[in-house]
Structures are given as structure tokens and as C-alpha cells.
Length: 100
Image (cartoon, rainbow, N blue to C red; front, side, top):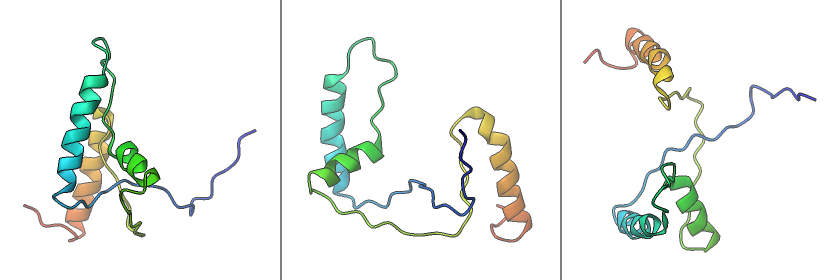
């Protein structure tokens, strides 16, 4: 059974604001991540949400969630490019962003 989703439901968009010293944590963790990869693993990913989620579970970091009513869009796959170009063009045309 398909359950309709309310268009006003909150969604998650990851945009992180991190302090400079956090990059030391990432660098150390990345070395550990690489050391744990199998030689034939071509799809392993060092994902920031997973890293921060683990640190949250260990009580090592705090995260503040901010609400935004803005429309977000981005490029994940090459097929996304055209729609993002159109969205940015619309923002420029509306005066929200400068031409250059």
C-alpha cells in the first residue's frame, strides 16, 4: 500500500558548518577508514552524516539543527545538472543572485 507524503513534511538537507579543528577528527578517521577498506571495495564512502552520527552516539559532539523555508536543490548525478542550471538561472533572473 502506498502512503501519500504530506508536501509540508520536514526533510533533511545536509549542510554542515564545522569548526576548523573538526578537520583533524576527519583526517584521523579517514586514515582509519582507508585502512579498513578491502582492496576490491570500489564503493566505500566516507560519509559525513555517518561520521557525525557516530560521534553523536558517543557523546563527542553536539549538533544544532536549523530550519529553513528556502527551496534547496543540488547536483548528485550528472542528470541533475540541467534542472539545477535552470533553478540558478531563475534565481539570477529574479535578482536573488548576481549575474556574475
